[in-house]
Image 1 (tube, rainbow, N blue to C red):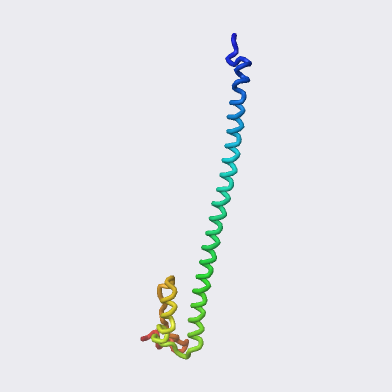
Image 2: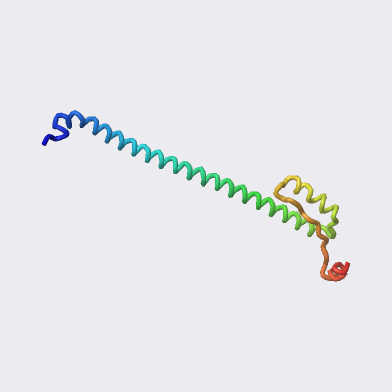
Length: 120
């Protein structure tokens, strides 16, 4: 029985077989390197966006906390806060901070005045 690849034919096809094997191997290696670098880039961008969002959220929370503390200091420094005073004080905060949908004025009622106020 004759061999399908005589020795002369094997020598003829060996460069082709080696080229396909080496080229395929290089393609696989380059593809893996590219995939790894792309995955690293995507991961890095995702983490950077997460860090930016976290920092932005922390800044907003700090700003809203400062506004709340300012309101507390306003009430502490005044004997009586009227609705008009409250509106004048808070209007700037509402105009500049779109995340704050509203602030409500509440009269300060001492414990002694509470029963009379609740009866009204």
